[in-house]
Length: 256
Image 1 (spheres, rainbow, N blue to C red):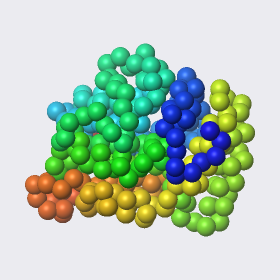
Image 2 (cartoon, rainbow, N blue to C red; image 1 turned 30 degrees about the vertical axis):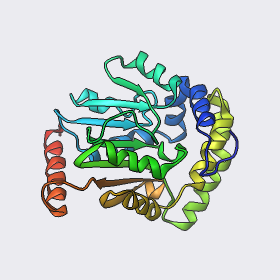
Image 3 (cartoon, rainbow, N blue to C red; image 1 turned 45 degrees about the vertical axis):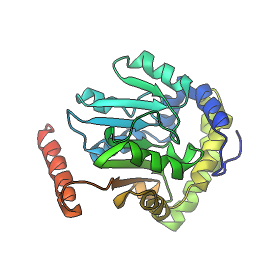
Image 4 (cartoon, one colour; image 1 turned 120 degrees about the vertical axis):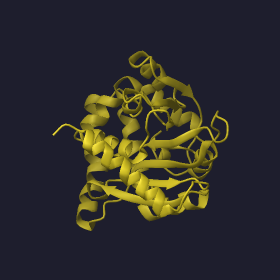
């Protein structure tokens, strides 16, 4: 794949990720200057899962995004449609449940998961609207979705610099360290073609998620969207208070 549009052929995207799987995590770390680790930690905090709950991690790839849940004693299902990615992940973390699946037709029953999350994968789905509806279907009433995706910098001059980096520097760096640098041309273009933060929030609401909010990271390079499935006990304010209380408890357990 060399050109990105919002109309993607699943078999081409799958083949691309199968090809880059062995060095995918290393390349991401280099290209993001290590920021991807910080972004993923923020996603885990936004999901707010606790032991006894079950999390579905979509587009999980090699399981890097799933590891924090497993390490905390939370059951996590790492789902991806790239068999190459899943094979790498299973070798690395045999304790995590890796499942092959398409985000637009998830192989899970209704109301299965306490939370569903997808990081840097929704823009690669052939039909993101259907994927958001599928996420809603498999989430328990009152459960939550967290979407972390590349987005649009909020400061116009920086946006220009960032676009230049995407289209020039990113493929050049990938050529040195990736087995398939052409894939990163596609990835750069898919980021540039992706909708704004507000538009993605609208997509979530249209799919049926409630109380949708987002947080910009790194000046809008990345945005984390969060929403809830209708049916939660209590009001939106009460849900927000429970989420805040969870984050306070996590903060109090961290070493100082």
